[in-house]
Length: 162
Image (cartoon, rainbow, N blue to C red; front, top):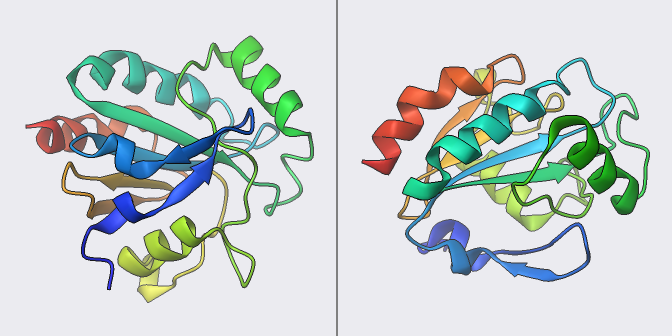
């Protein structure tokens, strides 16, 4: 059904603009559910580093804020954008806040979790900063746990970029 993979999906940028993932065809995507008040929030710095290092070679980091885990991203999209920029110098694309689990989950996240289940085959996202690496072909390469630091993904990103 999802032969073209991730490129079928759309999202909304944090400033309200529509984003077509098809526009990233041929690029490697690192998709992360983020939060501003989480123990893993400092990973924003590592994600920004990946974006500045590998962006010129075709990596796109996409952050999707979610308030589902411990209520750790309660702010508005504007507040989240401001926080990420001011505190971590985030320049990679941030999306509008989404749900990543359950009936109201964003279709992209339903697809990601189905394509790359977590530990013991669980489909749900367990916590903030779960990461999905998607290849140039639009298919999920690997899912990473919140505890996996962004810099630990460098070798896989290098391989995906070819």
